Image 1 (cartoon, chains in turn cyan, brown):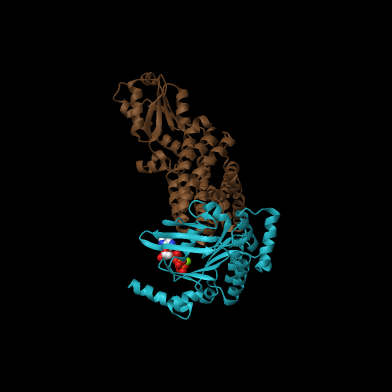
Image 2 (cartoon, each protein chain N blue to C red):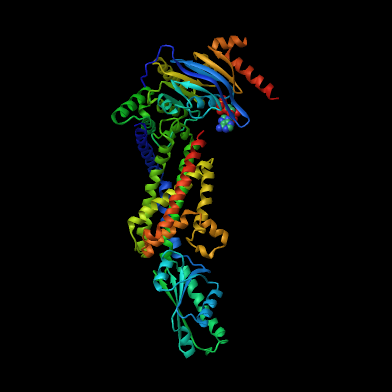
Amino acid sequence: MNDPAPARELAIEAIALRKTFGTLVAVEHLDLTVARGEVFGILGPNGSGKTTTIRMLCGLMAPTSGGATVVGCDITTDADTLRNRIGYMSQRFGLYGDLTVRENCRFYASLYGLRGAGREGRLDELMQELDLGTRSDQRAGTLSGGLKQRVALACAIAHHPQLLFLDEPTAGVDPAARRSFWKVIYALADKGTTIVVTTHYMDEAAKLQRIALLTRGHLIALGTPDEVTRQFGLPTIEDVFVELQRRDEGAAV
Amino acid sequence: MITWIRGLLLWPMVRKEFIQLRRDPGTLVMILGIPAMQLLLFGFAVRTEVHHLPTVVLDQSRTPESRLLIETIVQTQNFDIVGTVSDRAAIEHEITIGHARAAVIISPDFARSLKRGETADAQVLVDAANPLASSAAISGAALVTTVLPGKLADHPVDARMPIDLRVRPWYNPGGESSMFVVPGLVAVMLTITMLVVMSGAIVKEREVGTLEQLVVTPISKASLLLGKVIPFVIIAYIQMTNVLVLGYVVFHVPIRGSLLLLYALSGLFILAVLGMGLLVATFAKSQASAQQLAFGFTMPSILLSGFIFPLEAMPRVAQYIGHILPITYYLDIVRGILLKGSGIDVLWQPALYLAGFSIVTLSISVRRFAKTVE
Ligand SMILES: Nc1ncnc2c1ncn2[C@@H]1O[C@H](COP(=O)(O)OP(=O)(O)OP(=O)(O)O)[C@@H](O)[C@H]1O
Ligand SMILES: [Mg+2]
């Protein structure tokens, strides 16, 4: 977990990544680099291939062709090492509703090899960092949406991952909860964790360091939010988004 | 070293599973209550007709009269002659290994007694570990004694001479069906728990989304499955012990063979059913469809295994299906050990089948499981 990393080492380097499901092309020839410590966003309309991209980068799903190196591991040949170095909060993170908050975190921490007093210490730390102390003995199934997401995040970072994938972590979460969630994310980023996140909230997107825009599996824009809006000659990311969707619909006809 | 560390990841999985089980009273009631219910249901109320009992013949008379007796016995359709033997030890062997369920023994002086106008002796020995088989034998024998004298009338003997065809049950002098059903219940119950509960538990992880989260952790797929399975194996053994104790106390089902052997061979059966359960889990998209698929396996397991209706009484196709199901072989094992006191020398064949079945289904399902996670 403490691999010495050169200053500008890449956290992700994807080359010609491609995934098809039968005749459907979910991700087409994706070249992408993310630097260590970056807070990077993947944006795009529904079905544009964001989740598929992340799943390939996690080593969950083998690419149809192409490849990627993630935190120094080849995603197809070295997925085992990769898993120890990354955290992943899937689009519908499943907590065990019948386990308490702390039991959920303990379970995931144990799967990452944390044991005994070290693990319990880490759990105390997480409960405090994520402000879950008062809820730690509540069953996860009875939590509100915002709290569930925080618990899910706690589970995903228990092992201090170098790189954290967050697939729509704030979907369906109220503004106050979203704000506190992002505070934690930026705190992690400050400590050097690379963050790759997808979102449909444009206010969140505008605050990311760099974003990639996907549409129907194709990468069509890459850069800081400013660069991307300039590329399209539109005032905001939201306008770019609406324009993309309009083009998509045009293409579908 | 790495595999060793990964092996330890089993434990968090097992512990999590037990916490969940403890908090789910519904499943616990199902796991522990259903066996008791079934025990009472099936234990008291099972009765059916049987035909075509596989039968061996020991004809010590070797006369036209004795051959006529055999012919008549076959014509009742309650017996199928599957072989002839030359001594009583051979009969015992054939029944113990399950090759035959009944034997006809014709005494050396059968024809002579008939000719002399005395009562001619023959005996039907029936494997009474199966009470349905014994009732078939009794009714078959009764039929023979009423029909045979008429046939013998064509021969130079006194038509009114009585023929004494006595049915002698074996292993199960009381002839109670509970003797036969209770051991079978052990098998049926293990099938239900392992198939329905287990496959449901795995599909639930996929449905809720925790499976994707698990797969991205360092735990290997094999450990993941094993950790999921171990608690259910333990529960299966508890269930089995429950039914055995209940059967012993309520129905006085004996334990004639080695308990150690029973528990060891039960492990093979549990693996075999787990293989099926995992296979179901890899096919099912939702908990509901897992349950339906699992019942698709349990119903034939109950109906076509010889749990209620003896296999040999069923249509050919049903018999073929029955001979694929692991429960059919396990029934031979449980009944063999409990009622007949059979040892591994007799039970190695069904044990081997169970082992083979487990290896095939487990390896297919582990491979399929790896794919379905994608
Ligand atoms: N396992 C799968 N089998 C078949 N098709 C799939 C599979 N996973 C994704 N797809 C298809 O691939 C395309 C991209 O899906 P993906 O989930 O990556 O989109 P997304 O950008 O994450 O969308 P959303 O914003 O709705 O989460 C979609 O058309 C989807 O239907
Ligand atoms: Mg998605």
